[in-house]
Each structure stands twice: as C-alpha cells, then as structure tokens.
Image (cartoon, rainbow, N blue to C red; front, side, top):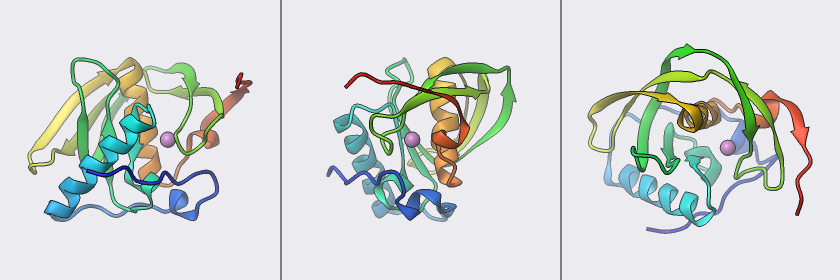
Length: 154
Ligand code: NI
C-alpha cells in the first residue's frame, strides 16, 4: 500500500465526472487499498478517487462504526429521506468547514472489491459521508453546498 498525494482546492480533476469501473482488476483493488491508507493517514472519514487524481468511481469510507472500512465501486444513492444539517469538511479543502444540508438517511448500492453487489441503509455521519463522497464522483464539492462557512481555529 502507499499513501497518495491528496489533490486540493482548484485542481481540475476534482471537477471532472469520474468514469465507471468496468472491471475489477488488481490495479483497482490496489487503488482502493492506497485510498484507505491515504484516508487514515489524513485522519479523514472518507476519500474518493478523484481526490488522489484518479477519475474513477471509487470511494472509501470509515466513520468508525460497526460497518468499519467500506470500499465502494460505482456507488450510487437509490433512496434518500429526511433532511439534516451538520458541519462538514473535506480533505481537499484543509482548514475549511461549513454547514451542509443532506438527506438524513440514504440507501447506497455499489459493488464491493470482489464484484458482489452490495446495498445498505445509512444514517447520521455515514449517510453524510456517502453523499459527500459520491458527490466527488460527479465533480460536486462540499463548498458548493455550504449554506454557512464556519470560522475554524488553527
Ligand atoms: Ni471531500
């Protein structure tokens, strides 16, 4: 595994619509491992492949709950319900935080790293992380959705 460089702010790769993964090759599984290592190193709860400069529909999430590390290939949200506002940040926007309204509960469908179809219902921080990371795959950044930026102490 290797820690990759995280792309920040105005890097154009963050604005590209990422491509679907057609085949789960060793390159893809290695990439997911690197993404997880990079996320943990940066103390984040989620990371999308475009954030390390790879425009593919891959996401890793770990909100330290019973689901543990999730490696999601071609994830999509199929059901959304409720609304909830909370403070978010992003590894690609160090030092920036703001309030974002998201669905309170979502159903996510994806492939796991062995190619099995998985589906789960998420709420709270996990629901938020799923929405935030899947946004990254469409070139949408949390700063686009912030309703109020929060002053942060350094
Ligand atoms: Ni982010």
